[in-house]
Every structure is written in structure tokens, then in C-alpha cells.
Amino acid sequence: MRRTIAILLQNPLSLLGVMLVTIVVLSAIFADLIVPFPDHKGAVVDFANFNKAPEWPYIFGTDLVGRDMFSRIVYAYRISLILGIVVLAIAVPIGVTVGLVAGYLGGWTEYALMRLTDVFLSVPPLVLAMSIMGVLEPTLLNGMMAVTAMWWPWYTRLVYNITRAEKEEGYVLAAEVIGASRLHVIFREILPNCVPAIITKMTLDLGFVIIIASSLSFLGLGVQPPTPDLGSMVADGAKYLPDSWWLTVFPGLAILAAVFGFNLVGDALREILGADQ
Image (cartoon, rainbow, N blue to C red):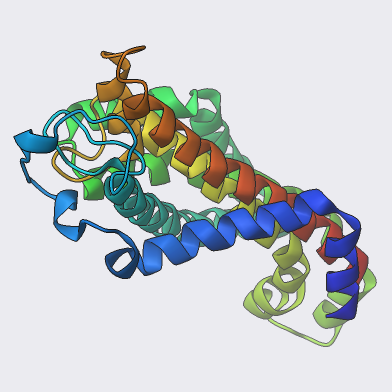
């Protein structure tokens, strides 16, 4: 703990990242207590206050039907974090398992699994997600499926490279000599040594998942109205620039803050976990 605090104090950007991530996460968790207009997350119309510039109590202004932009951005953080957590909760176990098996067993198993991985990696991630969402109904569940389909190969490639190096280490050979099963060697001996790299990548990927999800929503293929989503808010507000600038600027800054924060925290974790090893 002392080493972790020392590393954070030595790097102001790491502290900034922790602060940004803390704000984003707490805002998403306690959205109902923070926002001034909780009902504005849904299909609410208030034409008496439509398209207002930032002023009290609408600190981020209002949209074209009078909904508070601040309230909708905070609720959009909740949607983005749920999407990111669920995607990684599905993609990471799949990718890690495939990488471990391919890296340890080798032979035709390695060839088949890694060529399948290369096929997915050869397609640009956003293009693959757009293709899937173009076929499926644009809902939050289908958005998760689309992003998950493009995310697991990156963990496969990462864990595969680590496993190939680790399986020649003495502790693995010792486990094999005393008769440990393949499952024991893979999941009890090699996997723990992959965990620091996996955790670091997961932290970085939370920001990238938010970008991909926002990009899909920007193109009309993500979360559909009236559910608040950062990408769709940017797309809707872009039509009214520069007059109603707050409709685009504040959702865009919200995306920037979240992605920037997770990237800084990921860099800090890489340094901390590297120091621990």
C-alpha cells in the first residue's frame, strides 16, 4: 500500500486519473441522488425550458425538449459503465481461456485457435460491431453482444504470448514433473502470472469500450432514445452547432473525461503492478 501511494504521489497524472474515474463511477452509482431532475432520463417533455443555455438550475443547459443535460449525462455514465463491465465480464474469460489453451498445448490446437483469433483481429473493430448491429435490433443487449464479439481476441493474443513464455519456466516444468494435470498447470500455475497484464488491459479497455459504444450510438446503432447515451447526445447536438453548443460540448467532454481517466489509471496500474513484480 505504501509503495502504491508513493507511486501515485510521484505522478500527478495518475492522481488525476484516479479522481476522474472516482467521479465517473460514483456519479453512475449514485445518479438518483445526485441529479436535480431524475425523471429527465426518460421520455419527459418540458417545452417551457427547451434548448436553454447553461444557467441555474440547468448547469449544462437543456435539450430540444427541455430535459436537463446534466441529469442525462450522469445517467448516460451509468449506461456506459454497465456496457463496459458486462462486455469485459464476457470477453475476458473467453479470450483468456483461449489464449491459455493455445499457448500451453501448442500443435494443431494452437494453430486452429490462433488462426481464428487472427480472423477476428483482421477486421477493424468498429466495422465488425457496425456489421453486427446492422443485422440485430439496436438495443443495449445487442450492443453488448456486438462489442463482445470484437473484444475477446485482444485478450487471447495477450495471454497467448505470456503463456508461451511462461510454460518454459522452471515452476511449470516442476509442476509437470510431479504429475500435475494440464488444467492445474494452466489455471493454477500460469494464469496467476498473467493477472497483472490482464488487470491493466481491462482498466484501459473500459475507456475504449465507452468510445466504441458512443461511436455506435453516434451512428444510430447503439442505445436508442429516450435512454440517455453520450454518443447519441453528441450526434443530436451536432446538428445545432454552433448556436446550441452545449448539446454537443458537454456530452463530448463527458466522454473525454471518462476515457482519459481510465487510461491514466491503466498506466498507473501498469507501473504499480510492475513494481510489485
